[in-house]
Amino acid sequence: MTRFNAFALLKNALTGHKGWTEQWPDSQPKKEYDVIIVGAGGHGLGAAYYLAKQHGITNVAVIDKGWLGGGNTGRNTTIIRSNYLYDESARLFDHAVDLWENLSQELNYNVMYSRRGVLMLAHNVHDVQSFTRHIHANRLNGVDNRWLTPQECKDYCPPLNISANARYPVMGGALQERAGTARHDAVAWGYARGAAERGVDIIQNCAVTAIRRNPDGSVAGVETAKGFIKAKKVAVSAAGHTSTVMQTADVRLPLESYPLQALVSEPVKPIFPCVVMSNAVHAYISQSDKGELVIGSGTDQYTSYSQRGGLPLIEHTVAAITEVFPIFNRMRMLRKWGGIVDVTPDRSAIISKTPVQGLYVNCGWGTGGFKATPGAAHTFAWTVAKDEPHPINAPFTMERFRTGRLIDEAAAAAVAH
Amino acid sequence: MLLIHCPHCQETLPEAEFTYAGQAHIVRPADPMSQTDEQWEEFLFIRQNAKGAHYERWRHLHGCGRFFNAVRDTVSDRFLTTYVSGAPRPDLSSLMEGKA
Image 1 (tube, rainbow over the protein chains, first blue to last red):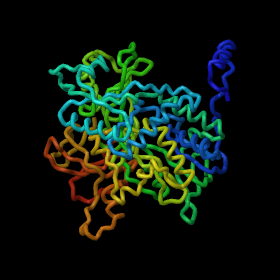
Image 2: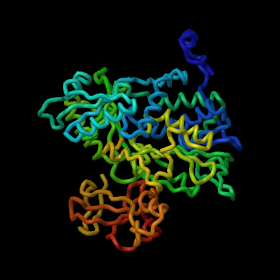
Image 3: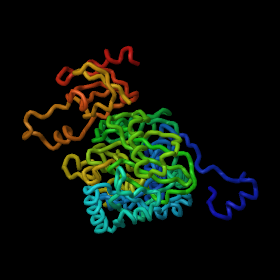
């Protein structure tokens, strides 16, 4: 496989770009694998990559019902941050940010990780108090986060309206400078290329219809659109469809699937230097390198598997954006889309063994799974390879809903994240 | 926006008047003290998350204020029926006829 570097680029430029080889083969399933990963998003492909690279398990297949990176990996607003309140979450998400920082070099694939900073706006006294608490908790955990006055917010993000007469007055903001964005497609492609290079089969357009179990209860393999495939271990990383896949193995999870929407504007010249989140008014905005404003909306109130979502949410989000950034009120929106996110009762993820021997699950990322991609993939691969959780994901097992030891980021953030 | 029929008001109204209230027909344990941790987990957290017909509760918040039940197809978001709380669970096969 061609390594990407300046010399290869120059050589191919001089030969009409005809020498580039395919980055991963479109594999057909073998009869048997050591590990089958269900779902070829960033989390699943990343887990395959780390299984091969760090644990020497290369007889692995990643199977997806569509094309790789076509689910929530390609549908999110690409925000990366780790300013979570609780110790467990801070460790997990900061582990991810540590991996993000070197991911392009690690994969020899430009994931365009940009440390442009994430600014969370406070619009009322409650926001100010809760963000200040977050900042202190983050700093105790070694996660960077600091408080900005309204004027400092304006200096950091010039399009911001800090007028005292604003519909949503800005009373300050919490800034994580190490946070930012990355190119979501490149994350899936980079992991796919790295995994395929080490012998992993990536099988696209092949839906897993059921997980089959041996008479002793352990996992036997998966039924797919291309027939039965035997496997010693099955690792499910299927986001919004985790419930339906796991149900076939008689494992029931505390998940509900909701549509989450996002939208982009027409592309414009660079104007927006960072990521701004406003939890109180539910607006998340950044500018992509192509120039589009990338805007995140909220989840619908009802569970659904339709990858659409309702228009009232978009209207609400755009109304909030134009209040906080009046400069954008003539912008035209180009398109909107939805993805299906799996939400847990405490809004924290599950990276866990299951009651079924040889069956593992990485799910429950809700509205904030992209930022965790490398960290989740890395700890999930560890869990699958060693049949026990990594110290970082040990608090995130599914048993917590029985013992009551929840990681209650829902209450901590008071918003979908 | 979804259009939802309130079985109390007998009117079909926009979703903005309603709030979603989760899976329906979850029965509160009669004797909470005797419940095991497994039963509490099931009652509090485990949900069907059905892909297809889903029995769920809604509340007509900005109308009569009352809760009611509904059956909705979570793939198409189409409501198959709505009915008052306490009424028996409608038979799925008769609902699916003619709606497919």
